[in-house]
Amino acid sequence: MLETGNYNSIKFKDDLRSKKPIGIYWLQSISVNLFSFKKKTDYSDKKLNDIWKYRFISSLFSLFSCLALFFLATKVFDRKTAFYSSLTLQCTLLFVIESHIAKTDAVLLTCSICSMLLLMGYYKGIFIKKFDYIFLAFWCSLGFSIMIKGPVLLLIILVTTIFIMLINIDPILSPQILHTLRSMGHGDQIVLCDINFPAHSNHSNVIRLDGVDMARAMKAILSVFPLDSFVSEAVHRMEIDDRPDEINEANQEIFDVINEVSGSHWKIGSYERQQFYKESKNTYAFITTSERRPFCNFILTKGVIKPDGTVWIIDK
Image (cartoon, rainbow, N blue to C red; front, side, top):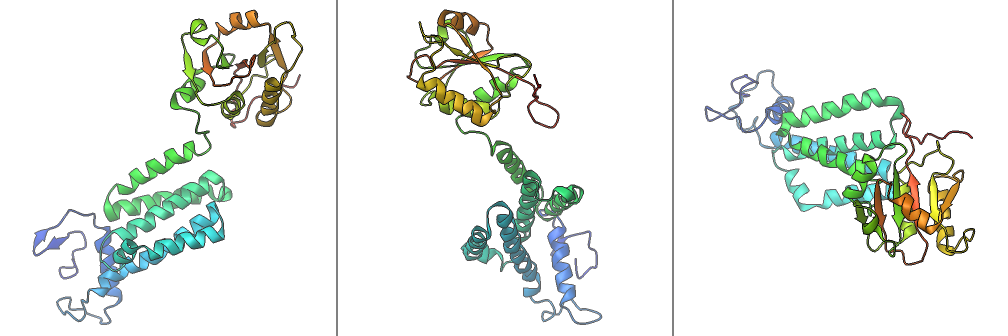
């Protein structure tokens, strides 16, 4: 490329070499031209064509990788974590080796870290006043990486995006539960029941949440489930036999969870046990827990999510 002056064709011993994108060759050509201190360079001169000029690009972008990682970790965590993250990268044997070789990996690593930084910045609202510049920088970084080593970064971006989507999802919420909650519409109801509830004899759509008590299950579900403000009572509990007004310890614990996650403005109704069984048959699905305390069963009514992502609350 340097000898022929044709920067659109890559040749090795007069044979066309197209295994790698052209970006890395352009960067190395810039390095060689930059450090060749003659007006007219003879690229056949070995002294002017030293290998370090090609390796300089890897070393330079390795430095950029450390700086980008430090900045990324500072925004996501703190300066101490950022320092040790960058230091760990610098002390990694493979990283040190790659920074001394005229290959594509150091440049690709820089593009990857920068893309992660921009994605995380967008997710956390760090650059909220500069969204247009963020998207431009992100696509430039992605495009540059494709010119360096093909679509490798696309896969990294896909995995990162999936991780960001799930970062605030409670780990006990299985894909089946998430799909069920997402499939429900406004006004649909779901039952959260204890270990003694006859779930399978009352409904065909039963999801097991073994090893989880009611409070833990309720907190996880309400983190992604909007309650319905269009009805007077979005939550109904099962009454204790012969003591309909009594609130036992288990019920009070759930009330506290509802207040903590969804707010304190929700009115909680109640059904007599047999009436609760009857009402539960008309619900969308059951989620059974390992809660062993009696009469710890609830029916939740799904509400509405507004365009801005908040729950629609109607003042009554």
